[in-house]
Length: 322
Image (cartoon, rainbow, N blue to C red; front, top):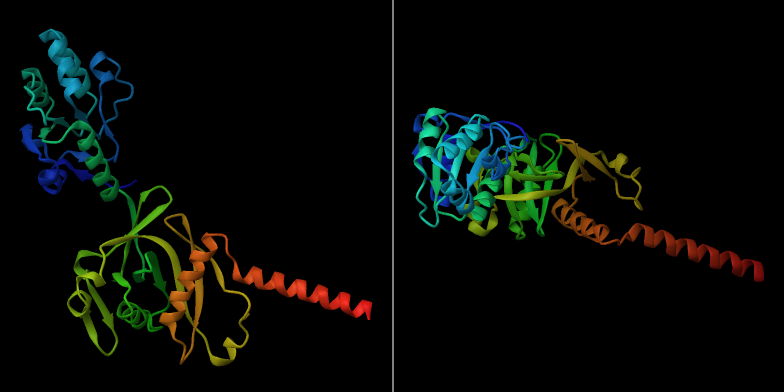
């Protein structure tokens, strides 16, 4: 994970989703959050502070509030002082049961200038929502050049030099029932280790630039079902312009494939030669289908080579017997 986000930004983005309301230290909304991890610091209330990390969101649920209520006022204040001294980004209290908060909680939050909020969700729901949101917004990300599509349910990134025809292929694929995610500058983020999720920058969302046609709004032309917001990247298809003579040198029995590293995550890549007259949209569809086959352990090239080997063995045996 990389980057930061402020408590204010989380509040603005998630207030409606998780029913947030501010309780104390409203002026501390610029406090940064640097981790996607959301903690429930139950043991910290008993003095076990080693696993409470700074710059993280903390969540109190019904159990933590009930535990505080059983403490004597001085003991409760000391426990909260120890917790807030760890440099929390903010503390969010799960308030689905409309709990009465101890007065010391608000006082200590104000004294340490640490945001204190309440949520209408239960604590498991609250932790899940906040962790999912922070995982996405704090994920390490990069912008790549290409067109990102959903082809047969698979996140496919079309790459290649400018003018090779990526947008034209994408337009044909959308016309054939597939879905546009992002044109020109897809944003890829490692939201889960080893998994890249691609989205469109807000400015370019739903749009595709095609030479000779200009900038097209795919949603308006083909309907809402023609675009999707995000998809996991599973395959890169690189379009490579070749001359007619060069095409004859390509191995017809072997697909050109390798891997390409994106954010240090290796992704399978297939290279498709581009020459006049080739139906690249169909070739992309078939490349995706072949990728599906290989993930299921089916390798047509290996099957063909094995059949050829067996045929040659049979021919050799027949020659010896004659």
